[in-house]
Length: 366
Ligand SMILES: Nc1ncnc2c1ncn2[C@@H]1O[C@H](COP(=O)(O)OP(=O)(O)OP(=O)(O)O)[C@@H](O)[C@H]1O
Ligand SMILES: [Mg+2]
Image (cartoon, rainbow, N blue to C red; front, side, top):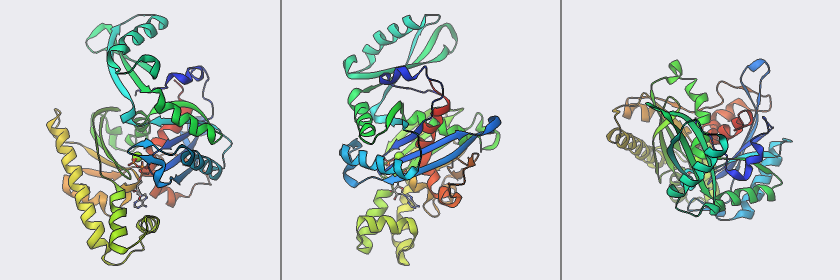
């Protein structure tokens, strides 16, 4: 399971397991998750979580557009959370992170390894090295060659990191870990696989995250991503249809969508066509995976993201694909603190995959 921590933060690496909350800054909301560990290694406890909506202009085209609005939302979320912990882990979106697996000679000292990685990085990263935050992780011996090791390089332009650190600072918080979204998602995914028969060992599991504006398909096998693809489709489109069909403002439409209080023809005229289209795109995304890999089926589909809970979506996906389908809940095997409302969590959990993975970093510093 790759983990990265971009090098502004290297001094934290030595610190063992400091308290930390996971903060997922996504296009529609800031999502905070705090986990603790149950006594006697009895797994995780979900202490608290908050989802705080971001104003529409906070993000533009996948980039932070209004830093003040982001900082205010982060601060509001933190106050609502009612925690004392100010150290946070954040993630960069996959589009902002360049990753590359490289091979290096085995048996180098840490110092030599760092030097080698930096000089190799020059070849793969299209920016000057002083413009990027760089991190690497040794994955292990190269398959079939004991004289080499596989190393994962991860780099991001400093600007991507700086924006998030600045927003956190303005909100009175301190960024202790900068991860990459796909890795944070993979971390939380271990909790989901544990709910599948035999931990989904040697199975292909398609994690389909349907957010506000992007649908990400990520096929995982034994904890490793083997295929990933983003597509511009998400719940925002449904909100827009609700707005135009029923003459509502964006806020009203969003509220009505979540709470289901819409006219009778909503299901047939708005929800159903949107859902059909989504299901078709999911089936198509899986076809792309089949044609670009050695596999011609997936064993499980796990729906995630805020739009995963759309009524009837899981059944429609299962019927169309003939694949066993479930809605993600990374907290299903965790103990819930008395502050957490189980029914609300059921609805919110699919959107908290990245925040959950980031919160898990508290117990897994690297
Ligand atoms: N209970 C619900 N019923 C229907 N839709 C919901 C519900 N809760 C959230 N959504 C929708 O889910 C979307 C937000 O999901 P999520 O939080 O995963 O998005 P995001 O990560 O911010 O966006 P993106 O991944 O596209 O950047 C919104 O379109 C929202 O309307
Ligand atoms: Mg998202």
